[in-house]
Image (cartoon, rainbow, N blue to C red; front, side, top):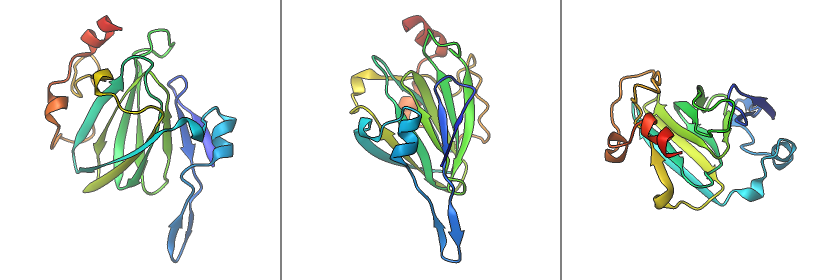
Length: 180
């Protein structure tokens, strides 16, 4: 398993080496030794979650207030266009965004440190996204910015088919920056 850095400070991409044969595919989804070499400890994660989305659905842009939330994100089935935005005011990449394709072909995982907005769009008929999270969910700490906020200008690859009521009512990037 290889680990790559990204354009966003502290964000990592874990790249497994899937074994493929006539039966299908086998891959590691996490390796404790590899994670610890780059400061990502399996013992720090307290919750595993999974979402299933249909083609064109956008989930995001979500984050956590307070001390934030670290997560390891992968697409177990299908493919998603995954987007991160740095909301750490002290970070040299504050306000920067980067997009990644996560899919069930190369099985890449994103390590998202605390202090990021995260969202994705399903690129396939069905997309299952798995998260390992380092804190229990507290709805009082949820923050969200509209997926179509003009200041962020995220380039979603497909027309939006469905968003949640919560995401439709999400705030603006400007309001979030003012609150930080």
